[in-house]
Image 1 (cartoon, rainbow, N blue to C red):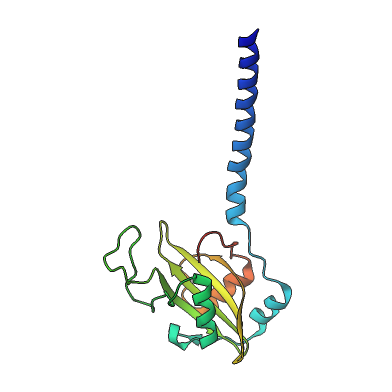
Image 2 (tube, one colour; image 1 turned 120 degrees about the vertical axis):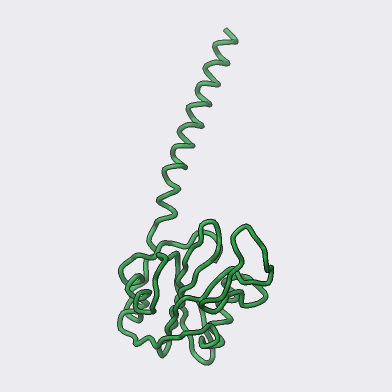
Length: 171
């Protein structure tokens, strides 16, 4: 009798673990791919504002650079200029090389969109929207973006089309 009770308990435990595992496994891709919904007021800003091209990280307003640094959680602004070598994933030929590369950005009178690559396995691309004024700046919205965007117009189209996914993992 004791053996069959043990078999029943272990069978139930196995089925329960299987159900939990399947539930977690099926929810994981959905969580990673959930769109990062751009709130209506911000959507209007992105859609209607004139974004002037910013071709260098140094061309961003100081407040936006400070907010990027806070978002990255690093003591320095750990992002390279376009066409600069990055630290290779899993390798550290130059430990001082940044793990992020600036790709495209644009600023309007009150907002800045920044698109960059983050080295990893695999590499990821992120977009961040900041509200900025000379007095204060703040991170408003962002997420994972498709790779290969080249211009701020490409980035804006991706943001407005819903191609940005919720950000999971490090910025």
